[in-house]
Image (cartoon, rainbow, N blue to C red; front, side, top):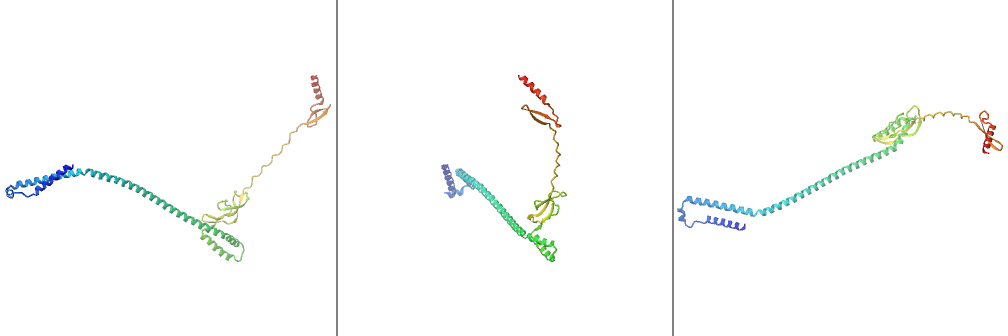
Length: 285
């Protein structure tokens, strides 16, 4: 392949050299026909083009192996780049998911913290309000009595109730004859009542209070209970049946038994008993 290439290169150079070389005899050249000269130039140019085309083909064929090697190298490099790209895409997706999970956990933690803070605030507010409920009881008892300063106490009472309601605290509504509810009521005792259903409220001892849905203090009440059912009457005792009296007597040193009825009459005669006894002895002899 190299030798042929060299020959083609040599032929191309000779052709170009002959084309550029001036003619040796100017006079003979002038006498030549112009048309023949033009034809030769065209033929020379065509020959040069053919030689250049063959040289280009040889060069292309000669560089094919090198190009193929470069192509394979580029293909392998491209394959590695694709694998690396897929790997980086997976890592990027993994980090993206981790980031989203961390962000979600952070938001949830922030929500829990806010909720716990609100719960603590509500709890401490409820404890504070619960500590003031005995004052409410005192105000209410004072207003129920006949006091000259009742109007002044009513003003303090209304202000106190306004403060409690500002913090969303309000009394638990309880009415007489309402059914007992373990969620809001506390039973102090029970009284038997025939005219009321079981566990009905018959008296309110102390008002209950709640704040939103939380109970600050249960309402203390007295409830009714059904009386026990009456005990059944005892059945009359039956008189025992008359039993015959058994009487034991001694005769001739031996124990004889007589059966006596309720009237004292002997059912079995002693003589008959003796006769039977004598017959038994004779048989034994």
